[in-house]
Length: 102
Image 1: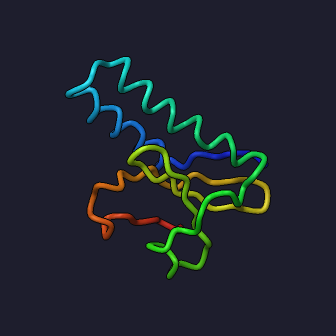
Image 2: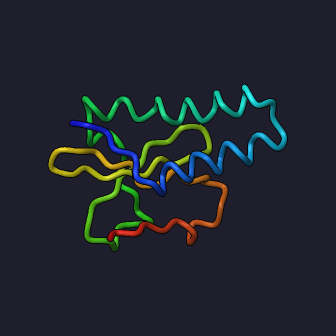
Image 3: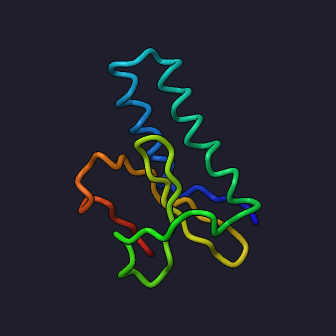
């Protein structure tokens, strides 16, 4: 299966990097974002390895999560692709975790 990052997930990564760059050295911010990106590699072999995300259980698709540090990587498994939908800082208000299912 192929991993596909949605534009929203890419935006999340950029925002995380920008935020971290404000108080960390640029290379440390980059390293953390790189770890988030690398974390999803496991999904190529084990697409259902993440736990179901209970905050999104009301949606029609089954969303799962991987955890890397303080971040949730939210994804769902399609027929040919694994879609990375969000990268969410778990220290934020959980009600702000939204998925656009269009």
